[in-house]
Length: 356
Image (cartoon, rainbow, N blue to C red; front, side, top):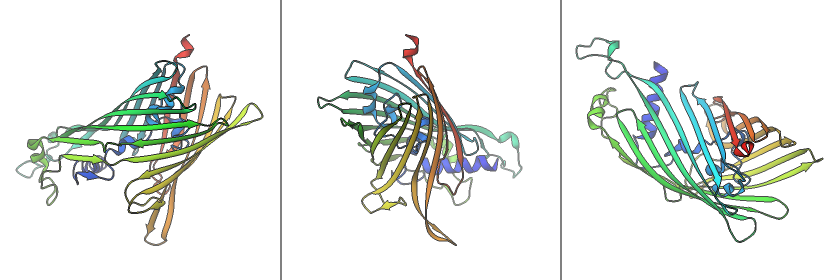
């Protein structure tokens, strides 16, 4: 019960109670999709070229040769929160492609104990109820090749839906834009601009439900929270190269720079922007078996006893691809190495060419 209540307070605090313009609004949309990408510490902006490109870089969708379907599931906070993703994409013609994806991040069956004690001061467990808090993101993607050989662009239109039981819900809308470029010697470059329109969320709060919890904790939550929030833009820049080793073996390497336009604890941080690097490696054998590793999320931390230090988030994973069916696994920390909240992430990708 204590864990559930802590999670409830966390979700309410980060989603509703705060200023209208937040540095970390809609953060569930930044976790990432596809165990293959997560195993490389999300360093895939430049080389992403499948159904999951709708999330990482929609320009990569133009590389699709047939319809593809992707699924992913992972659990966080000792299985309290569930993160699920489904994506579908298909080529329209030789120059363009479309895709659609759904992300759900939720904590289900949260204990609502705000009415546990009745008006006479007695504890009555029958007054405990359950509710869920869930975030949904639906993304519509379009990609097209440009006249310049090797240059492609893509755009995303996003619809955000967030629900906190019967207490509050919101709708949000935003756009992403991206490009990819491949040189003749197979160097790849990618730029992904997220929330270029400063994704806007408008909250509707049930004031009657809010009144039932307003005084649940003395001195807390006394005022009606803000009803609007804005997600500031983010920029991802990547460069990658695939090296062939003795025909059957390959090594794919990518370096990304993740840029937020605000000051925080990232490795490089100024009043204008903060930059966080990520490195991903994928070792492949005959395009069937993959071993992956990555490092990212470098943070400047101040420790009480040890002074300042730099933390980071390592990742690793494996993958298997056979006749259009690809299964991937990633073992990754959702924060940094010091927290040790590692998660097991599984994903499946299906290429419809297997049915032809």
